[in-house]
Image (cartoon, rainbow, N blue to C red; front, side, top):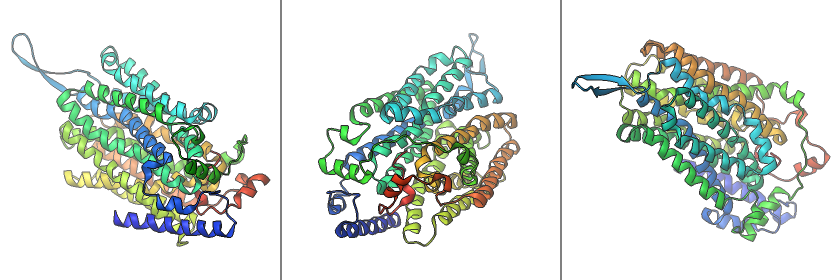
Length: 506
């Protein structure tokens, strides 16, 4: 933590010194009449800044969205387990509450992503028209409500469960694109990396929280309690979100005049203009496809573990649900810390000019993928419980470095079109959530270690393919087809210290 804090402070201090120099020389307009010293002195009082209130609630929003999608991965183990019962004659027998085979379970676990994949671009379009607050809030609120009504309806038919999960996926599919719309209004350019990192960390922390807590709730309160508890938490979050958050800082009555002036002037107070996207150039650009392939590769391993890790630990390691939940959360706990550290380290290397943007993106992304290939593949051949847990934790945790590669690369190559590129990339990257559980269901018929080994080898191979393609075709430079018009070129002369984070018009 000390190293993390030092890196953050170095970047912040250097940025502030440059801003101070620019302001004093009269060449900088980002801060308007707001003194940079005010921001520096009060930087630790985050609770007094409304943009950090937005960051905390978007963090909790992502946290909520993930506990609502992860709950079934844990609950399904108990739903399909054999339960000891006694008949009228006092004879003992075992029966499954839901007698679903591995193929059916794979279909149930993947059904969420059938809906999720369909609304990525729609979420971005809706948020620009009616506001990110509404789309983000209602997307999670509806998912929470459907989660609450799941237990009684699933007892009627497995097809109702499939329909519920697909609709939940549709509602949550709009959430990630909406976050870009929210931060486009609230985040000063020099703070967007930090604020966005806080937001997206909620997703990983949601996984860390959901797996052990869902395991405990399932073991001691029954599997329906997971759906009631997590769904209720989602509705409580929505209540506070709707009351506290505004789409734009000027609509927030609690924001200080200094902070409002700081945000608006740093964003340039520009009028919104309709952006024309060069679709043909984007879809034929090698760097774009390098990002898409990398995103797909990372999500294959991530979603495979997200949906199958509790089942694997139950099948192969013979863990009870309470222990399974805790151990399944370790990889995502590691990723929560790694993604924060890697983002600050990446900016540090670029600010100090130790590496170019392209070098940072390729090093972090390809390095992570290569090590993930090694550790994910090794997991299938390790026979000890400790070895398996350590190997999976490292494999998933290193994904945090990859997110500092492909995850922000859209902003390097085409800042004006980054939201669309993210929508396209996330659409392809959702396919692993659909395909991986189904393939796993077909492979793991007898719940043997040998069958699970194939699952891990496939994930490792996909990481390797992603590393090769990203290493060959990725770029950290703005592409020719993304060049801005004359008016925007004037804005490009503004002295931003971190141009890779320029997403003013997302």
